[in-house]
Length: 344
Ligand SMILES: [Zn+2]
Ligand SMILES: [Zn+2]
Image (tube, rainbow, N blue to C red; front, side, top):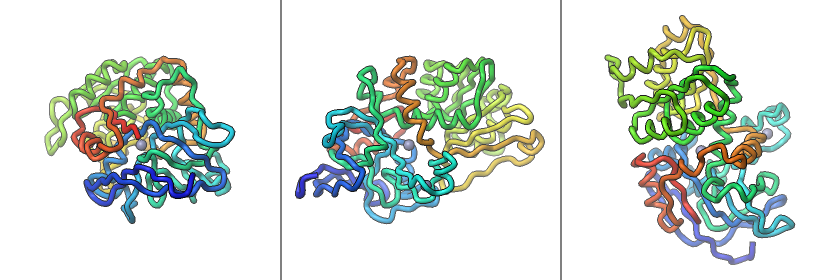
């Protein structure tokens, strides 16, 4: 990066405090190339940073550039001009989880937009070249920013393979839940039951191929609502909890068949999950936790997106320039859409 070059950057300084400014470009490290960022998707995990200045047990320790769902064009080196999707996880490659092919569990991970690693909400950034996957022309810029969450959905599905004819529940229909609904349709699931608290997301789930979709109330309280009762009566073989709420997990526990499996993809507020133990124990359920994606998922997502069988661009409901990053986060917090994209 040319010394002294100015880069427009959006940083989070604290709860609901996003500031856009000009900064001097960072150095390009060994193995890295310069990337002109074109699209950044905002994620439910970014919402945790925005609303709580933390996620799970990680807290904001310095002003951070968020953004881990990103695509761009390589600026320098032999691949200059290539459109790419980025894997946000810079793994070490030699710790035990990395050597076992589970690099999402790397013990020395640098993840874009997390901890001390700045993410993609800036016009130019450097990123390891090996983590930049070329994207064919058949994938538009819109779709390019949704490839990372598609990779996450593929990873979740790999943790509980679903064969043709399976009945599956997806509890929570943000972008990852909706992508799961689409993937399940492609895998030939015979029933896909989807739920969300928001009507427009339930409508999107129907459009993406859910065979039944329900609006559930935010807080079940001591009495289970009629909508939740109905959801819990729809027996499924496999369940995906994708909302981070305890009520959704209880719905999944009630709906999944004895001996079944629940993949927990959602990230809870306050870093704590609670569920009704009796129902889960009586069915001897397997609760499978899920973290991000592994290295092979992004290339797989690119391949799948290139077939045109997924409705990726339909997930994108809002688009903002980087100068309006604050407004983009405010929209994310309103949950009025599905996927919010920032175009640096
Ligand atoms: Zn994400
Ligand atoms: Zn590692």
